[in-house]
Image 1: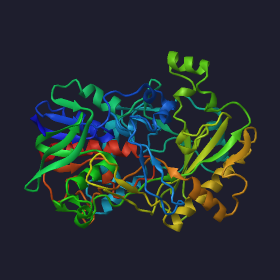
Image 2: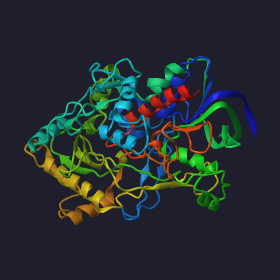
Image 3: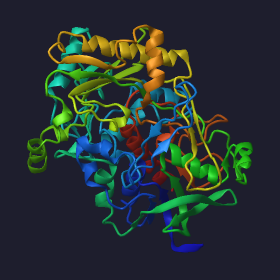
Image 4: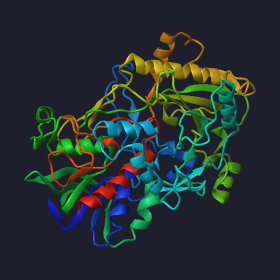
Length: 528
């Protein structure tokens, strides 16, 4: 074991969406020394920059390539979970949708005993992070690091989808991140000049020029070093060698919903009886670590398209030239260009269903392409009741933890997805789609009753890539961090990433994760 001789004021574990924000914000004070540790590679591949190419990075070296355990309510299938393993983390492989969730989500967090996390408390941090191409407003900011813009390319079928929604009486929504979330509209995206604008682009690249920031890639954290109930640094493996780095100030975990609880568990922080069973010596009994796992589950409702207008021809020579010369054309698409938020029951206070639309065949994460022109809907449950967990398989820090998402464990969760499949079919059979609708590929004509549709969902549902909640914020016995994101019971240790969400937001999770880190940076500075 060699010591990384320098000590730092802050060590941040994980250069994903949250870690990039923290590294940039904390080093604005030039007297503060920060070490950012990232397990992944130092370079971001070209496919990450090209918006429509994100699924080409799945199951490559820049993907953690996780899988769940056998999912009991999905016929025992093991579901693939891509997570970004490079600077920018999952913001370098996501579909770039800029979505905050519902204002009521944050008010609910606050009601659980988390002062400072209501919507009006967090809105300034969303605005601070944002460079909104439409300009500043009560809900949006300009001049922030993260570029948020309207789509440069909108497929003709996406316009058709919005017309179909109108036929069904679903009202248009020009901005899902303003006062009202319900309705149908085009998504805004984290892009700039026709390229992805992830957290590394927005925050880290300019911060790396600062002398007080050290970024170390290829460094896989193995343990939080704890002395007298205080975090003093991190052990990590780099190029096969075990090393340590010491923090005079705080150690901050930003590894995400899978890696942050795993590192805590490996460090002896978690449910003592459970970690003992795999051979870890408990250092601090904290039963909530790894629990409360939540994710959005979706299923693809897909159709053949009778006209050659989809993204199937995105990589034709003219479109490649259009992209590389002008950053225009279908390769600028984020694939899921538009969507609907709605409530499946009138008594609900916020939407429980999101229906994404893509002018493409998107089944099995885009890993099972078809040559024909296709389009598809992605009905997604955004307010799941189901809860899962992350746990250790062994004491080996390089072994993936066991992920149990426990999708669709309640009948209510399944009903929302079945409703979404029926709605997707109604949209497809609208007048608007008549000129384009070919055969239904998924679920296909054999699934008609609720039971048959539910069977299809069990067979084909997948993650929408939004795992959260495994280091939940709160003040009860299952909370892992307090409202200032400090670990309960260990000093100088914080968790700052999507794992702190007590309940998942009704929408995509990248913008909320960036907001969490913006707010945390202020709290860390105040507490110092």
